[in-house]
Amino acid sequence: MTDLETSMATIIAVFHKYSEREGDRHKLKKSELKDLLHDELPELMGHVKDQATLDSLMESLDADGDAECDFQEFMTFITMVTVCCHEFFCDEDE
Image (cartoon, rainbow, N blue to C red; front, side):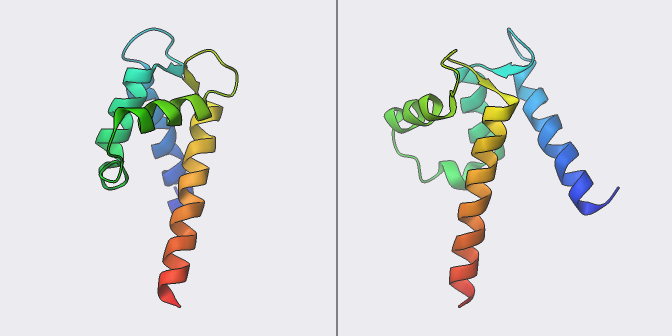
């Protein structure tokens, strides 16, 4: 597989690693999302100082209002974080 294909497969695998822990295996409950963020994005989460910030993040990701994060909502988050990282590193290089 190419680097991009491997990256896509990894994102899918990570989502399912956490979503399959309890309930609907196609959605992340709040606790599963919190575990995923802390385990898989520790550098990013080091900048989050309080539970209210995490609650706000979950609400903003929950586009359909079901109090869970499906794969499409998760990918919206991953895309936004990736764009921000890209912009940060591009600005840093200049």
